[in-house]
Image (spheres, rainbow, N blue to C red):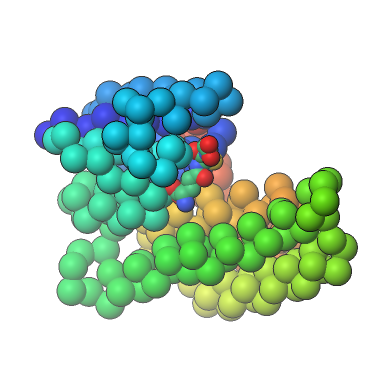
Length: 201
Ligand SMILES: N[C@@H](CCC(=O)N[C@@H](CS)C(=O)NCC(=O)O)C(=O)O
């Protein structure tokens, strides 16, 4: 199988780089310099019409959106490596829910918080406070889960931990701190300490 990963360091491609490292999946890499507009060349737009990284080309067919790539990697490589629940298990259902929770629900709140906090015409302390409170409520839900079990699904670390931790970790940089959530803080520290999360990815 041929895999070509289009990426840029310290971007939305980072969680995919970490997942590929965690899974030990061989692939080629093409660095797209999103600061210099390489994501908007006709060649790249033919691969990802959104002009964004990450994108993974699988035997010539592109798959874009980080969440979709994670789910595909989990199915295709994670199950065999014990890092993704098998199909038709309760854990698989939970894996899908929590990955969507992170990328769709939590990310939307983080996006609002970031926009309202950033300097510029959209900066709005009131909106930022509401978004921070929404993030806190979502972290309460995560706190309850991680107070009851050590890992997001099943009894050991999985790609679900990587996926959720990447999004929650990103949130801390835009002001959604986890200090008031001890189980989340302890779990996040364990996940980010994994070798696959190191390096300039
Ligand atoms: N929802 C997308 C977000 C992708 C995204 O926003 N990528 C940014 C880098 S963090 C990008 O490529 N930006 C270039 C641009 O917007 O021109 C995903 O998860 O794949």
